Amino acid sequence: MLLDIKNLSVSVEDKTILKDFSLSVDEGEIHAIMGPNGSGKSTLANVLAGNETYEIENGNIIFNQKNFLELNIEERSQEGLFLAFQYPIEIPGVSITPFLRSAINSKLKYKKEKEFDSLEFAKLIRSKAKELNIPNEMLSRSLNSGFSGGEKKRYEILQMSILKPKLAILDETDSGLDIDALKIVTDSVNRLKKEISSFIIITHYERLLDLITPDKVHIMKNGKIVESGTKSLARKIEESGYQSFE
Ligand SMILES: Nc1ncnc2c1ncn2[C@@H]1O[C@H](COP(=O)(O)OP(=O)(O)OP(=O)(O)O)[C@@H](O)[C@H]1O
Ligand SMILES: [Mg+2]
Image 1 (tube, rainbow, N blue to C red):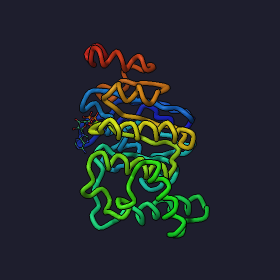
Image 2 (cartoon, rainbow, N blue to C red):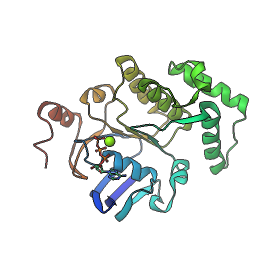
Image 3 (cartoon, rainbow, N blue to C red):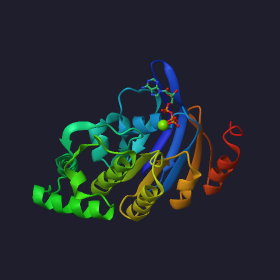
């Protein structure tokens, strides 16, 4: 088992958002989480990543045999968790290439492996960018600033393909993507499936799940999973909405 979340309850400003939430993800699995606005999907992603805004009231998170609740944001990413944000942050003045090199090097250092020098890294990032149709010009721009929605998403995939996490969480990677960009994202996920063990994909659109076949689909409502199934569950939602799930 790669990720095991048990009976997790989480609140923010005295409001309970996740309620007795449990989810297990095995190595090699793709899980999709769907659910109405405000059901707690992004909160789950943030809590997993180690965002300290949220108060853990109960439950536990085991990732790769480690008690995740004892690790901070950075340690969790070094352990192999990657989160692509619904609203990526902009960092003016920090350009992509050195930022990503320091991210991968800190991970390599943690694992006591050899770090990249700038020449080696430049080669790596250019070859990955080429696969994703990212122009070299973008690699020297500031992090996310002035990027279009589709460019941000492509950049997230670039980041993911360099960091090669054990578990990647993609929060609404489909929103605002044109058909070509959506295809790039889904093709990359399908290609990276061999290198990145598992994915949690948070989405509102069944059409994304036509392109990335999930092993499991979960419906989240009011802070917990109310139903789990396969791809056909996503189709049911597309047809009749979330009302029938309690
Ligand atoms: N930092 C915070 N402070 C206050 N309330 C918060 C915070 N984070 C989340 N919430 C609240 O928790 C609830 C769940 O939010 P969350 O963003 O997890 O929903 P979601 O399922 O991702 O929705 P969407 O589909 O719209 O992205 C919402 O009512 C939201 O306002
Ligand atoms: Mg959200």
